[in-house]
Image (tube, rainbow, N blue to C red):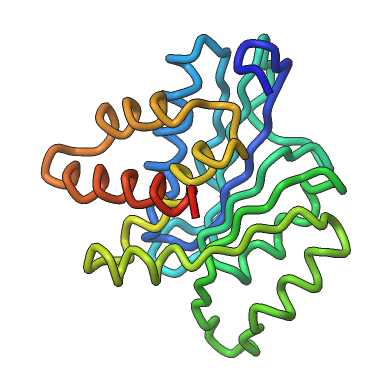
Length: 198
């Protein structure tokens, strides 16, 4: 997919409060703007406090008029928590690519689903599922799972699930992330790039 030739690209990111979805939104928007695209974002749906559901939309391309992804129009869905990915089926079609963090946060008073149940449900909509243990990898390699979102977005660029170059994502990370957290996020980017080759 040549960077310049896309008419529009629609992304939905879901997770829970405290997983840094707004930061990811800013990184992708910054990278898309720097790549010469028109960008619209919708920052928040749901409860952004820790543990509440969060959903953000990013659309970029030649001319984008609405920030919201329409039903069945998502090109890429990134889920920072597995069960949250089920809420995005509304936006998916058979060509939608899913990039899912193999991370499950139990929901109070609800039965926790296992990975196989989530994957089976999503495969009814799209077969393009990539499930990655991002939180686990970051925890093991960097001593913190907090940067799992940056890992997933960096991986999406490296694996060409996202029509933005890894370089543009790296530049955006440097722009968006506060100085005191930059080092760990740069290491996360490098780690994702390394894993993308395997």
